[in-house]
Image (cartoon, rainbow, N blue to C red; front, side, top):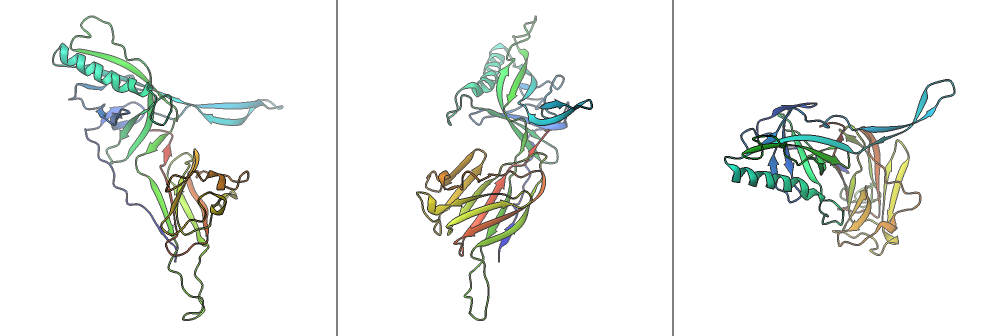
Length: 324
């Protein structure tokens, strides 16, 4: 029979003791530059660390409200849109002597400025990541791009063995993302002969309905991975009626065979076979809706036409949050 399993979550432990920061309380913060190098930001024994006084932008995302005047007075909100977030991050850099200070200042500055270089995916920027880990072991992340501020104080005695900068980081997506994904697995059970040993029914079409829980505070856009065999794939959100179908017969790949997989990304829309074929034309445009999962519980249904033993669906997403 169909099975549903959840991932085992292993919390990530902070590498340095937490410090108290405005807006979020005690946390350990690490900046990861585009090369993957990790820069501890709250280790007071390091040669650079965050100056908590002045940190801002870690709270709720900024929003723009579109309103219309109401004929009886006041206004009515017509549309709500989250805007890019700016994080202000004061940093002190020091060294045992001028040469060491200069090396540290240049290295950390380059780590932030590297985010402005073109990324390998063709984007004009290559974001770094700011990680906020709690003493409980949970962690949230947000991609950041350097905006301004890597300037010294320009005061007497600074720039010799120490200096500080107030960096502003732009977050294109204003929401924080969990470091641990949430996954749902559905699998077709062993098929049986309808007449052996007695009249029986085993589903070769519908893997079934289930409830997916989004523990975050904002919508997420999941990624689906489907293992064959399957000839057509339909995912429905039962509370809204939104759905989309991938007809494998309408693609250059043809029906999905046993051992083959196809991955469907809902944001940005993307459909790829395990051999890299672009199968997005197989979606039932223009009626297809690559729906999101709101916070809380959402009833969904997975349907695979032509399913057999080994057919499976895996859904995965990273919960997103308003605050760090």
